[in-house]
Length: 345
Image 1 (cartoon, rainbow, N blue to C red):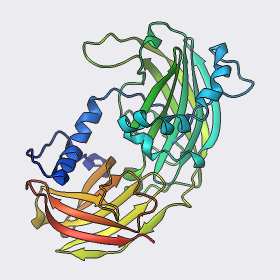
Image 2 (cartoon, rainbow, N blue to C red; image 1 turned 180 degrees about the horizontal axis):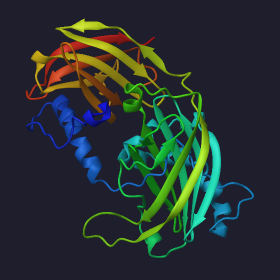
Image 3 (cartoon, helix red, strand yellow; image 1 turned 90 degrees about the vertical axis):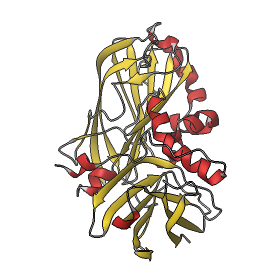
Image 4 (cartoon, one colour; image 1 turned 180 degrees about the vertical axis):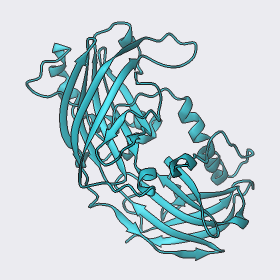
């Protein structure tokens, strides 16, 4: 069995009892986050942190789109600057578009133009941005658009892996009556854990075979099947990543790694078997603000119990240190089982 088959999200549909304390309420939000996110209709269009902008000289499906470019601007900028959208789509908070490489590759099929605008890889994550131009009146009447079937589809091939990569998250929004902009995210954590090395430069080949209006049971849906394939090169830029290996011990638990990338905070901690199945990892900045969960998490067997890997949203840039708690989520007060403090400056 591949290690990635053991990967699972610890959030799921679990809930803790209701309580009054703010800290507990925040933790309850964490436990419910994954379930809410799965129910939320989103649209992916990024496979390595990219931004979709139309290429000069390429004929557009929608002739008026050229006039919209100043409004659309950089897709990643457009998404991150839309605060209400970013709050709904947490993946948008991880976009660091200043490191993105311009791609500007467009494919047209079935009257729909799909442009990969930009992409980037920080060694731990891949982002790809898209612009989708739709002429179909039935398809573009909705505010939300989807590509392929669901999150976790495997139709992205990378030159560094024999396996198809798995989409982890996505976010799309409507720019005007016939244009959508969005981003697709690929989490590389499980591949790295399996020993896959991410080279400084690699090729990605994406395959969009289905574009649909929405996928909520009971809602009217329009589906267009076709072939929108893109192949492009990405350069890894991990120069801004900071890796700490403190090997701190607290009550038998060992904090092995803390990795800060421009878009994520990653923690690897060895949890003693005695802590039980309800042991849960929380991360805070130096002001006590909880760092929200990201996409990937997995558990592996270890000599003392469980080696837990968790990925979170980026910690605040000015944080002097990070605090990692292992808590018992079965208790109303979220009893702290272990605590670590890691200087970041």
